[in-house]
Length: 295
Image 1 (cartoon, rainbow, N blue to C red):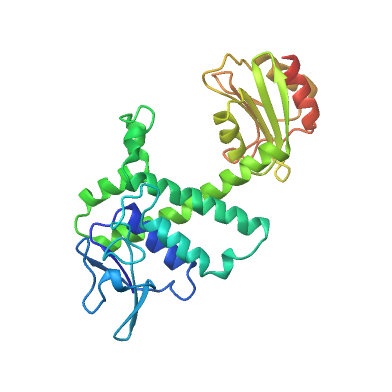
Image 2 (image 1 turned 120 degrees about the horizontal axis):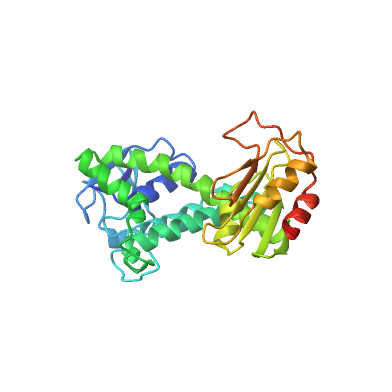
């Protein structure tokens, strides 16, 4: 059994997610909710518990973010800790999955650590320190969605946690893709100069490379998918890039391919997941880069 406080926040939700997804034999654990700070009947006082797993009757019980035990952070004012970070430390030490030294295991550890770091920030209300902190787009973050869900469906603690479980599953994929994209950019991509500024080209199946590279400051990013063979060229929306000339040259160089120039002139596509009927280009990435350098 996992016990958290009622009206669970991201700290409780991510702690439960870590235990159910990654702590061996806890994937089917039942959930219970108590008033913040409390423990379920029969539990020891929090300051007397060294191991988060307690035996209460016939049940093994872990308290998260409540009860002042090992996975509750309310006995300290340390701003770098929350229940989720304490839970992640415990789960990581007690799961063979994370003892693996393979690059894949290390990338998953990195992704989960970054995810939990965001939860720590949220739990200490550091969102008010974000740039333009009152901007509407922050309501699209998980905290804003969860707050609205609690208004739409009041007093449904387990429903909130189940919602967060699915969301954290999805977020983990996104964080893993980001870690992977950063590796692709740093290790497997070609950097080149255009008249508009620095650009990057990558032969990768990971579409997150485009978004991450743009956020890193690359004015123009090219991604060629080696499996599906389609090509995407995107410029930052604040740039002066105009891909019209490149589009016209590609039409001449490979007229059998399907080319689409977005009305903004900052996005040039040859195939993609949204239009699988498009015919991919036969041009090598080196030719694509050559045209963009000269455009």
